[in-house]
Length: 74
Image (cartoon, rainbow, N blue to C red; front, side, top):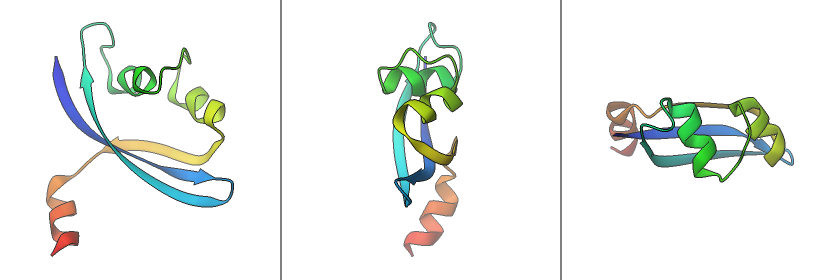
């Protein structure tokens, strides 16, 4: 198992959103994408389908770059 900080950005109903998630990637998931889908309790078979289920537009996920976040905070 590993733990990752993931960022999801997109828009919902025309409003931009930014979410930070701490996810645990277990042996059943194998990939961060599967862990994100499990986090949301979805049965989707891809992040794109998860985004459609939730009404997210222009959405993507990425690994959080802690050094970049620290620079923004100072």
